[in-house]
Every structure is written in C-alpha cells, then in structure tokens.
Image 1 (tube, rainbow, N blue to C red):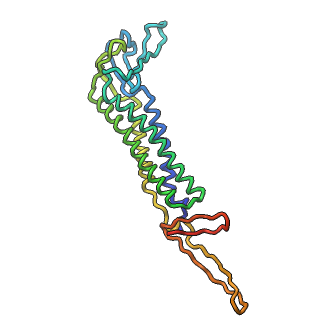
Image 2: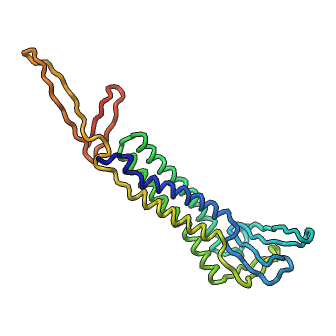
Image 3: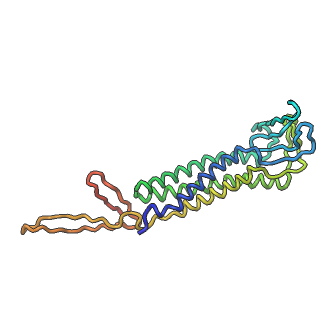
Length: 254
C-alpha cells in the first residue's frame, strides 16, 4: 500500500528546486551585470568596461581619486527617461512579477506538503494546492524566461542604447557580451519550470488514506446472547475522510 508521504517525494524535490529558482530570480534581478560593454574611449570609463543592468548602469573610473585606486560609479535609470529600451522595461516588470508569483507558488507547495506530513487526509486540500503551486511556478518561470531571452538577443546582436550625456556612456559599445545575470536567470527559469512540472504531476495514491474502517456494533439479542456485527466502510480513491474529535471515529463521504 502506497502511503501518502511516500507519494510526495517528487513534489518535495520540486519545492527545493522552486526555492532555489526563486532565490536565483531575485539575485538575477538585483545584479547589474546583464550586459557587459567594452568601450574604446577610456577617458571617463578608465577600465574600458561598463555594466548595464535593468535598474542602473555602472563602470569603474580613476578620475576623482588617487592613482592606483578605483571607484565604481553607478547611475540609476529613471522610468520617465525615453531612451531606455523596451527589453529593460519588460525585464523590470516581469521579474518583479515572477518574484511575487514564485513566492505564492512556494506558499501553496508548503501548505500541500504540510497537509501530507501532518496527516490531513482531505484529498482536495492536497491536490488543489499542488495544482495551484505548479501553475504559479510555470507562470513565474515564463516571467523570468521572457526578459532573459530578450536581453540575450539584444546582446548577441550588439544592440545599442542612446544614453544621454549625464550617464557618461557611449551610445554603442565596441563590443558587448552576456553578463552573469542572464545565465543566473536561465537557471532560475529552468528550476521553476521543473518545480511546476513536479507539482502538476502529483497524483493522490489510491490508498493514500486508510482503506478499511471497522466499526464493531455490539447488540444484545432477545435471547440474552451477545451478537457482534461488523460494518466495513471502504474508502475509495476519491473519498474524503474527516476525523471527528468527539468519538474518534472516521467517516468517509464519496
């Protein structure tokens, strides 16, 4: 007989994958290394390398401090600025959405696993939460995958950004490459997708709840002899069982 706990090992692994994927999603969102620009004019960007993220742009300069020391300058994007490309706007919104949806998916999975390990045998309270969690994981995965893929495309095609003079950035780089945030985002999307698939694949075992319940009803016959009658109640796969605290008996409703 398959126990309820042993049927959820794959979903437990999915919860671990989802947790790591959600953490990587937040890390990717916070990293500035989405695009690595290599510039030939090193008057201000003395290191020749600038990092373009979805929230700000940063570079290393030696101008305002002693020689031999370096300082990182960052300029945050203003949402009202028209020069920001669409893929950066989309990345900002979708990654924030993915972080919220991923947190909701983790909450649904936690509730479902809690019901299993605490012996709460309502099938609807297990399957429905796994179903909701799996759907939310997949939505979060797509919300990460779209901006990551779009920015990856922009990097591979060496697309430029018309920065205003206040950013001290050239409008186009000599060359650019993929930063660390994009592979982190790809791994996050894969883990969230796997977690969603594992959650959606959950099937409540046929005998995940007690199969038989025997109630012994003792009656005293007319002739003074003690008769025993056995009542077997079979809990089918789709049955929902409720534990009554008063008489410590279980009743099954189909």
